[in-house]
Image 1 (cartoon, helix red, strand yellow):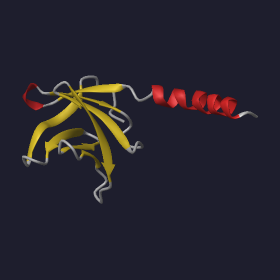
Image 2 (tube, rainbow, N blue to C red):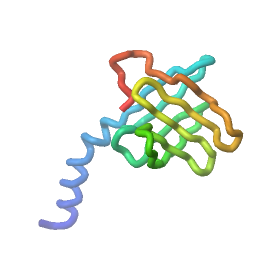
Image 3 (cartoon, one colour):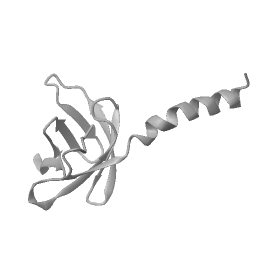
Length: 110
């Protein structure tokens, strides 16, 4: 098998998984909104949209079971538990979006 053929086959196998990483829009307290793309249970990084800017958040291991992702450049921290999520500003030391949940109960933040 030639290398280009192998690469094409691998890419075709991965495309359905990548297509599953569509964004979930979340509404938070104080009328704030966050959009998250990726699987917070499995992925090593997620894409988070906050105030019109896109952030690539890297997974940070925790001992509590919460899913934690950080963007070192901005200082943003995303923490997700099954019932809700929150966005923290570690530079200012305060939450910026709290009690974030999907509008549709069937739309799960994976």
